Image (cartoon, rainbow, N blue to C red; front, side, top):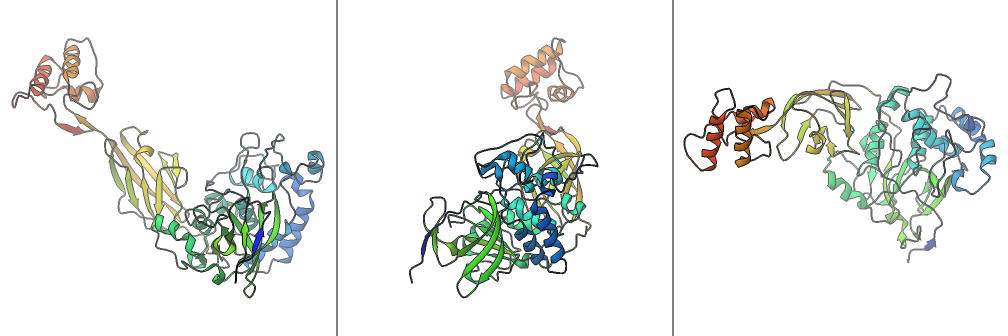
Length: 461
């Protein structure tokens, strides 16, 4: 039977990867970081309260779905072309300290306000989350359903615009809420993401989209063009009819609002002017999460508690820990270095590889390297050293006639060298820089086999 063809008006959210890190709220005690005053006076707050009360004895997924459905109809009014003042009066628009708007399906929502103020602890007048908010909405629903207390929320990395971490997000969502990997299902189009990172903790791989055991409240990840190259959207399952292959889901940032949609997995649709693609090919991953593990710190260890890194080397460093987590933040001497998303670091199965570019800014000597995972932290002693060449007085990495000239100038006190450069210039080892050292370097450049002292040898400092 030929697939049905449908022109879809669905506007999807382009989603990528980012992370929120631990922060202690600094706002005044009178400010409610969880809800804005506008939202508290809106009908959606009342619906949320009722949904939480009605679902208090239900499962994790059922609670999350109840929260999501209570927000049905909430619009990102900054893009709806309506009376802004009326929207503000209705409590349906979060504007921050000033009205900030754009032309895309992004921006002013209660959910982005929550992410900015509560999760990121960023003031309204200093940071504005001008972003697609599908993943923020799902994070908000999970949070409202009760799956992170304050400290847990602050310790995890929340996707605020998601590319489901088959590359990053599906796993970051799982780890963020401490779900079991066995509850994740990956369709064939997602396989190249798994291969790319060579992770071996996946259980349900290459599952046909029709055969995924969808349940209400489960998380769905889509690739709108069907290629799987990019994962564009995250939603929450409402229902799946296995006989008709009709998949119903609710989501945020779809036509700029929270809305429930139906997708016929047998049908072909065109999204945003893209080519017709069978809907089953758009489904990339599914996450079931009724079992949520308690957050328990364990004692993390590493086989490399002390590392010496030579900044003249070609690569950075690698550290293997006993953590199963794929989430980490890294700091050196208490200064935030980066994370797996925004930096040149790669992390999987507790293995952290830090690129050279992340380390070159630190001075030679001893440093304290701290790796923070969602299941604990581990401390590593980092010693940064550098290779020097005897005779290289000007520090250009080679020994030339210019070094002879500089050594001569230092010998008659017309020039000065740093302590480490004085060591490179003292090629005869007599404890001072003089014309005798210049003579040794001249002999080295003339290819003498004797009388060159240490010229051309290297040492680490």
